[in-house]
Amino acid sequence: MEIFNIDHNSVLPLHHQVEDMLRRLIQDPEYKDGKLLPNEVDIAKKLGISRNTVRQATNKLVYERLLVRKKGVGTKVANNNITTKLDKWASFTHEMDEKGVKFKNYSLKISWDTADDALSKVFKITKKTKILKLERVRGLSSEPIVYFISYFHPRIGLTGDEDFTKPLYEMLENEHHTTAKVSREGISAILADEELSAALKIAVGDPILFRKRVVFDPGERPIEYNLGYYRADRFTYTIDIEK
Image 1 (spheres, helix red, strand yellow):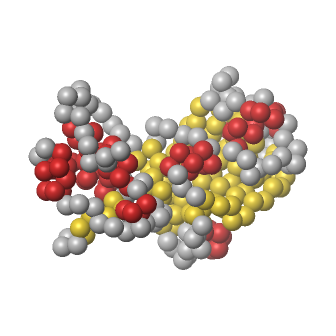
Image 2 (cartoon, rainbow, N blue to C red):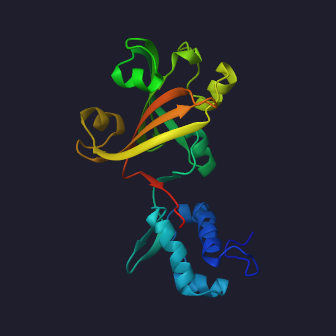
């Protein structure tokens, strides 16, 4: 199928079509390996549209850090940067599978902890209640990019013997009849301390995207409290806002 193709009779705006086309092009092995994209004038001529329309679409992907534009050189696919949208969430496994990204588990640790003030408030349980804690460092084949710490409500019935290498929410639903329905999140920027430096193979003081997530079942009952530490040089959150 010809990549450089849009439908001039479609009701979908041209810049959206070009954006979708560029997202498909990014997945082409040739461009993933570092080949420069055709310049915007050539793309515009191929498609029979204005250069400004191509520039609008390209700027969006540069902003999402999927493309890198260098003056005097050209535009190419960014290396090793994972992008996710804030209006969609899933298990990390499914999210990476959808993007065709190969990832690995660098470490996986299961332990039992006791609820502190924060956890007792989130889960509405008494302090010192035993809860399962899951720690995972995950990333690309070349390097780790994210460190997850998850705590689970005792109601779920986890034993610690589960296979946590499986997609998390799929395992909870299939084995413990617990369905993840809603995620409420907060994101902030922090600097890596010694623990995060060691886990993510970065320097102390490097920037980190820190995300707190509380996952609820269909009855609005909390099931997971997740802390995610993402390498800022390898992960980007994006959001579309319409007026």
